[in-house]
Image (cartoon, rainbow, N blue to C red; front, side, top):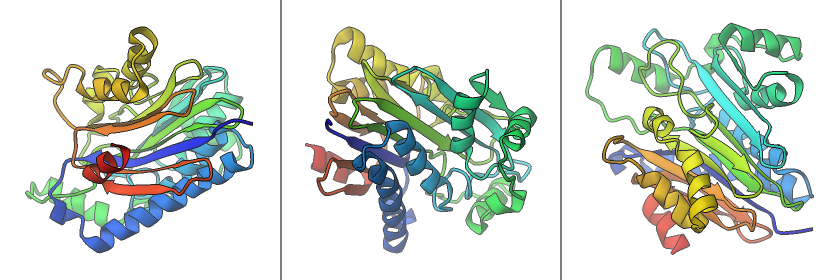
Length: 311
């Protein structure tokens, strides 16, 4: 059995440090630790990278502090629409869902699409019908709505200028299992004040998520529009495969690609087949965690702490 590694993110954002007070930072770290452990435990006992990334992301979807599943951002008309994707680096199979309003764990539905559906991407009513056909319990829309996100929505529709630390973040995980396989899972509630029906990068293969055993697995977070247009996850793949860059240099390159034309927040976690990994962003916040084998886990909120750790 070989090396095993899991890396997760809970969102990259540029924000005023005062918008994340110590008690909020502590709660976020606790949530990241729980998600990391959920995935690591599976890898540690010889489970698959796919199971590990799904478990880690489901943990964050269930935690209202993260913008995925419960706690997702409100659309302008006061609904929560979520999306997610998974991709298996071994088979290059994937599953993606978007426009969900009633599914507790979008990443689990994405996994079911990958394994039980003849298609690779389902949206809105069709995705809900498929969820019911697979025996999933649908949630009342109120389950997803938290007081904090409701207040943010009210501020937006009232055009209040308020600093919100949660804006346009996403959750994701990449992993290498003991069998040498890579996988990725990414999930989000989208950006604050989005139009109904808006789709972000988290469910787009090559945009916000990509995995291939031969090269890398990558999950993105930040401004979905620019991440999709820059094909950031696939850019990590391309820079490694064709330019033979290290995973760290490839992630740096993907964060910077077309930055002159596509300006905004970008964060990327990525891992290669040898278990080397990268955590990159152009933001001051990069909620993330990783664990390599039996080594001590690392958890951070601020990008400067990540840089210091990985230097």
